[in-house]
Image 1: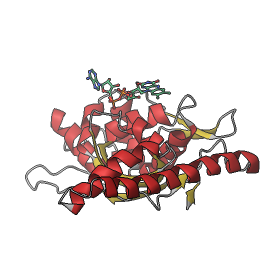
Image 2: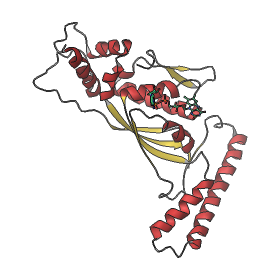
Image 3: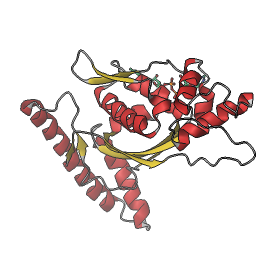
Length: 249
Ligand SMILES: Cc1cc2nc3c(=O)[nH]c(=O)nc-3n(C[C@H](O)[C@H](O)[C@H](O)COP(=O)(O)OP(=O)(O)OC[C@H]3O[C@@H](n4cnc5c(N)ncnc54)[C@H](O)[C@@H]3O)c2cc1C
């Protein structure tokens, strides 16, 4: 199977529980992640009475404006990302502060039937797609042959699980960067913002840029106040990109 779009599924979001002894005078609509960030921000100044009559979203807009982004670090969101290439995740996992990753292992998982991700710039051109597909299919055939040969070569290794691991970890060397992978990514809202600012920008690789825009859409639905300053637009290369209203809060 060939993927031409990433699949982003929200796995987890914050569940805010208000402490009875420090109630906040909430105003306006909000989600738990937004309330958690507001609660943390208000604790700094003990302003639970909300003297400025600010709704949660207005309050958080001000937090972003003042670059008081550490309060956004309390709200964590976990996403399941599928239909993306190993090339993409190699870039994604470079984001360190505030991130956690768990990715499909090519040492343990059989890639004989792996899917592949068509690079966005190739999609829609039959000739380019055919050249790319031919290479990908021959790489997969080489992988299958190598696994089989390595399993025979190491038949003396008693544990079948260990033998398979030895075979797969060596054979994966021929799999292309376009091999599809799956990854669970957890990050706090501030870390997501940094990643989105870098990866949804026009300078980013097209595939991770497309993923960043897809993630931004999910996050803008989940927690509008934490991501509302990002603007999605169509860039000169006719692909979507996004820019942050508040840089690196
Ligand atoms: C367009 C583009 C092209 C790129 N090209 C290349 C390339 O050719 N080669 C390559 O190797 N990488 C490349 N990268 C990856 C890039 O160098 C970063 O590794 C990646 O973008 C993660 O950024 P970050 O370190 O700012 O983010 P994070 O690791 O998420 O960190 C977020 C922020 O926390 C702070 N921080 C985190 N860790 C530290 C630390 N140890 N010390 C001090 N402050 C810290 C910094 O302010 C940092 O910006 C590219 C990235 C982009 C967007």
